[in-house]
Amino acid sequence: MNARLDHRNPLVFDTHELGRRPGALQRISRTVSAPKDFGVADVITVPEDAELELALRLESVMEGVLVTGTAHAAAQGECVRCLEPLRLDVAADFQEMFSYPDADDRGRAKTAEPGDDAEDEDVVYIEDGLIDLEPALRDAVVLALPMQPVCQEDCAGLCAECGIRLDDDPGHHHDAVDIRWAALQGLVETVKDDEKDNMGGADAGVDEKQEK
Image (cartoon, rainbow, N blue to C red; front, side, top):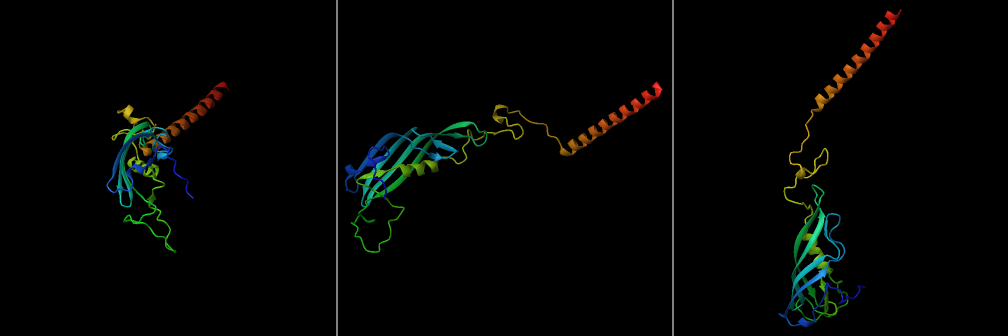
């Protein structure tokens, strides 16, 4: 059994003023604290308790209350290219239909029948005149956030060789070395080392002869 809605929750709204008068309208502006896990985990999110500005339009219709609105917030995350922290202003539009639990899609009273199917999971109901906007807001904000956030559109990212942030050093580069030449250079250095060792051995033999 679901827990009853708490009218003290800032994302729970009272629809009693609308009554069941189709066409009745209520506009609400409210700034609330963002709940926990409001975004894309480990990528970009609206921090818990950050300000969430809501502009809402509640309209009474035959079957319930239609809520249309926009949420504005500041999200924080990390650039996927250069890994620098970033801040992004996000505006998320949403619309949710909250149905009366005792009315069908034409606003008529329901009559329970044996064998009726279970309640549609996609239907969101008004509970004692209260509606909870958190699920709809959470979905809207997640959809409005970028899955691959960047600090700027032309962010050059990090150097693949040394990890330096390329935007901090536009002229940064590493001399390209052909691996074939690198291998040859290593072979030449090995030969030189062998020659030195051989020369050292020959000099030692000469010195021994001179001493005799």
